[in-house]
Length: 98
Image (tube, rainbow, N blue to C red):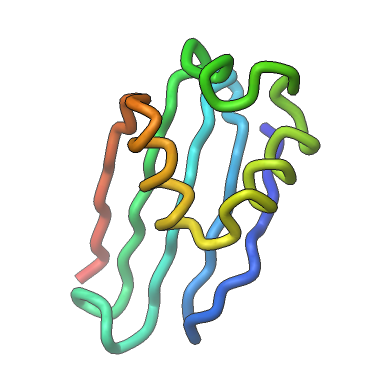
């Protein structure tokens, strides 16, 4: 698995971009602030590797691929929305420890 941690502008949150062992793209937002639902939640969005050509036609899935995505949209939610705007399916998983 290859991953890149993104800087977050919100306190008590963390975000990552990953290439999973299966080769898919995974975006994760973790929020442990008291303002989140239950105070300890994570959203995980997945994009099948089959859709990578629509994201970046000239970049192989690697740390450079993740850095390029992070530079294009440094906010994890903006990145998710941008991927969706391209018509690329994004699976969503919500987990709460509450």
